[in-house]
Image (tube, rainbow, N blue to C red):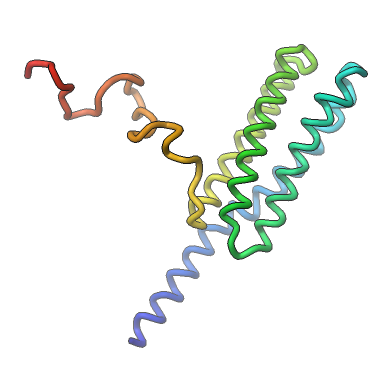
Amino acid sequence: MPGTAACGRARRRVRWSLLMPEVMQVIPKTYDLILWLIPRLKEFPRNQRFLLGDRIQSAALDVLCLLIEANYTQGRAGLLRSANLELEKLRYLVRLAHDLRYLNGRRYQHAAERIDEVGRLVGGWAKVDGAGGRPSARRGSQGPPAKGEAAGSTPAGSVPSGVPT
């Protein structure tokens, strides 16, 4: 059918326009994070600069490389998942540096906010691209609790089993 092909093209166009903000923002924001992070790593104690500092720098650079590669690849689902995994490693390494007092609270907060921002953009890109985000098994089958709902509570409108109505 002629109308179906035109509709399919339009859908792809809309989908790409939704994808563009994540692609256009995530790589420069990752680059800016690395520009900010590397001078901070030089301030680590000498014995940790080449251990923890190198691991943090490598994780951040790996995220950037994976995102650049995903930008130029058709099947980018695996690359975006790998970038998400590297971001998670980076989160824990930066947190460890803070706990060991190599990063003060203000710098840790800045780094954590930038890493979370990049993570949200990567997740948005993966979602729009059909790659999906984190596996749903990690959060459980119901997903995270709704806003204002306690973690162990039941969804609104449902009655837990064994509770009289």
